[in-house]
Length: 114
Picture (cartoon, rainbow, N blue to C red):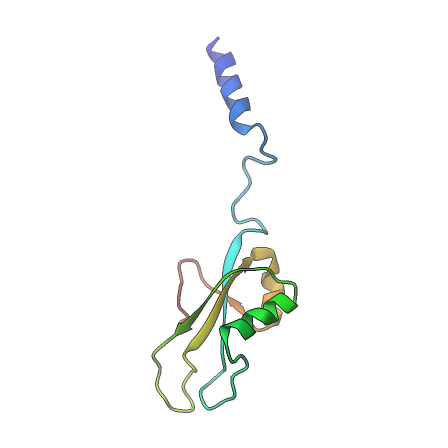
């Protein structure tokens, strides 16, 4: 009787799940990517706003789940980085398309660029 209850519990627990052991790192799992507004200061920015950067992803059929803009404190010389970073949360299976557009994946637990 105890075996039948365990079996019934197992069946009820996993009924309706196409794959109960599916890894959450699947191709549709979200991942954050980022791109700088420009390579350096004194260079015309490739993206003038977060909306413009996100629109490029959408134009390439990349679903954007969330987005944000980081304004980092940097030096003001022309050789310094811009300090404006655009980040977007996309599906992991879109990472290759985003990388072709110049976006790079953030490391796990990394909210800011290095």
